[in-house]
Image (tube, rainbow, N blue to C red; front, side, top):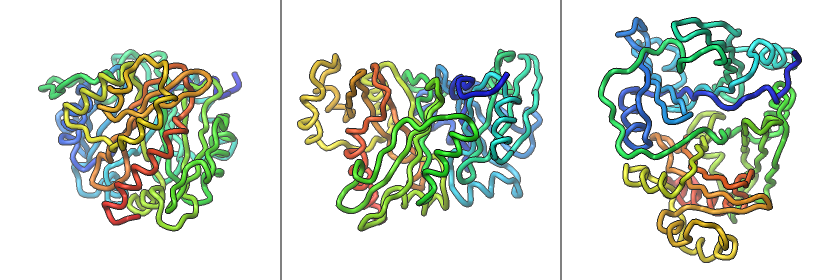
Length: 364
């Protein structure tokens, strides 16, 4: 059967490399509401790394740290700090999708292989994408477990308030100047994705800096991948700051869907998650835009949640502060009610808010 992006079924797991897997696991469980579903390490026969598998509804996050001096993960960490190493798509046929990508010029990272255990057969193969990120294609149609190699976790759970985060909505990459079109075309050519939205310099800018962005997606909309690059401005843009402190391209943020953002954000705030602040003047501007939505504008303002509309519906969203020591990876919490866009009217407010945080670091 010939491959097309209609064969992409959605996002699967995220693999994050970190300096201390145990501490990072406690962070995501205590603040974001994950539970520890699996463990891999010396106690399970793995001698070179420790990895915790975190789960919340359809979200799977693998948090992995090296425990030997010469491990390749150290190379990633010394260059990028804690960050996303691997993103994954569920597909109908890993072998066919991987073959299609290589035939169209993709660079192989790992040949497709079957991994068998008591839960069945899990198939995956990987491709190199921007920076040191890899894209893994998975088939779990004959697998009832989570990810091979992990043993069930039997220790103490540290989850505080449950946050009702459901699944990955989209994953955003930052790439070098002049590379946005290259990577948009890469996903179109190698995996049959399509360009959905293009934000130009005039759409997202301040008096100091700007960015341009393209959103590619599978033709069945199962996965969405915005790609940002810097645009010329008077001062360093937030995308340039990311590229400088990350020492190259990579995943900028992961958007996570919820069906009740008021509950999710309130619980996350109570747990200790820090969000990028929204100025109160924003809510004066959006009063007309917010008319008719069931959520209270007073509650949106209390929780600093952003709102946008298109012809199909509306969305609500909010962005966390960076989750590591470097201002790189952060998260977006998003609730969609019909709207399939990316909060274009909020991009300006977000860009200005991040720029204010950037100025605090002396990197504007």
